[in-house]
Structure formats: structure tokens, C-alpha cells
Length: 97
Image 1 (cartoon, rainbow, N blue to C red):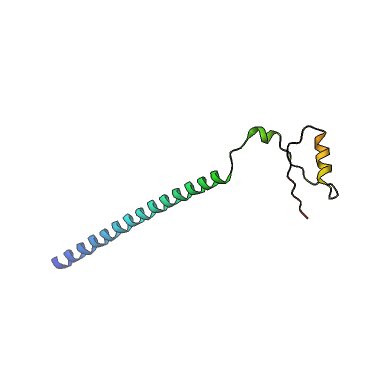
Image 2 (cartoon, one colour):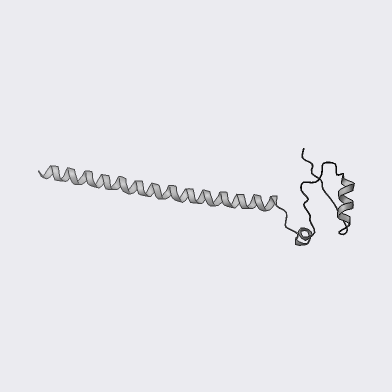
């Protein structure tokens, strides 16, 4: 009877130890995952900042995006049209067909 009790208590303590180790391992894995997530978010932020030049509010105020232009319109036509509103300092045309 005494042997059986000691055997039971030792098996309980070993189960308790393995459960404790499992929780500790889970905690370590969560900490690693958080650390990786933080690193990735920093990398993403750094890449985004490097890819996007600093915004120029003055340029944004004088930038015009024109959509659904007639297919027959030439660059000269567009330039002349917008020149009526003010000085055209530069232009970029993107044509989709």
C-alpha cells in the first residue's frame, strides 16, 4: 500500500513537472512570436518610409489628376487647357488602352 502511494505521488509530480515545462515552452514560443512580429512591423515601417518620399504639401496643393480624358486629346491639348487656369510647371501623362 505504501509503495503504491509513493508511486502515485511520484507520477503526479512528474505530470506536474511536464505540465510546467509545457507552459514554460508555450510562454517562450509566444514571446518569440511577439518579438518576430515586432521586428517584421519595424521592417515594414522602415521599408514604407524609404519607399515613400516625404510629402510636399505645397506640391500636393497644385497637383491635378485628370481622368477620363478623350482618347483624341494630345499632350498639347491638355497643356493648353490647364494653362488657362494657371502656369503649368510640369506634367506626366499615363496612357491606358
